[in-house]
Amino acid sequence: RKSIEDYEGAREAWEYASALRPKNSLSFGNLAVLYGYYLKNPVLAEKNHLKAIENDPKLPYLYAQAADFYIEVLNQPEKAREILQKGLQMIPGDDGLESALENL
Image (cartoon, rainbow, N blue to C red):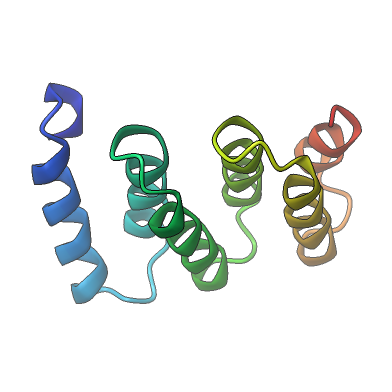
């Protein structure tokens, strides 16, 4: 639905998936991007980024995705730095997270 720009339909589908599987990270991550970049609701975007990370704290891309949101949408590089550092605490030595932190 998102690919055909039916953002409300995508939101409904991912909210439903999140209700069915509240411990997954994929639907919450998708909602975070949708809310942050397409529906322009940064509060719900951040909430969903953090829920995705909580549900799957060993997936480095979730931290990088949240950091990008903090920089590109909220213009808060300090929060981006914090989330990347949290990611490195959970996944020590991850090259992608270390690189993202260095590039901040």
